[in-house]
Length: 165
Image (cartoon, rainbow, N blue to C red):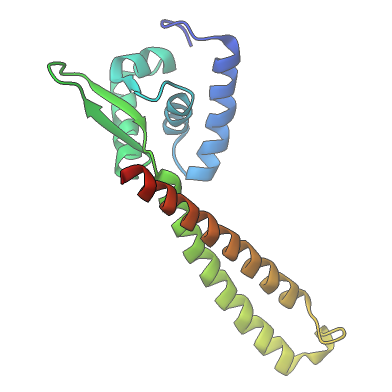
């Protein structure tokens, strides 16, 4: 990365966070690096040209990946009066969408584990030790995790409501 000067520390963190985000968000490596850059940028965001210069990617590649991030609602943009440039920034409450999807995913996993546990209890009682099974332990874990995610969703929504009031 060259052009606009960023510290080596920030450059390294962008790369590290980008690798993490690529896996977590299930996006292309460039999209993940753009996302990481925006996470580590001022709250008012960066222009397209600033992103292109810092990331050192082609105009078309940056454009396509910003479009993907925008469509996924991970990134949003705005304009300033009298200035034609768009400023890109992290979508303020993207975590809320992600966590709500996680709640749904956990619910589906729990239903499947419950079906497995019911089947195994009926057909393979030897898998039970003191009326407990590994499937039951996993079901308890998923329930606890889902409860925590739901609590976090409620906290974010309450924060969002206070902020918008």
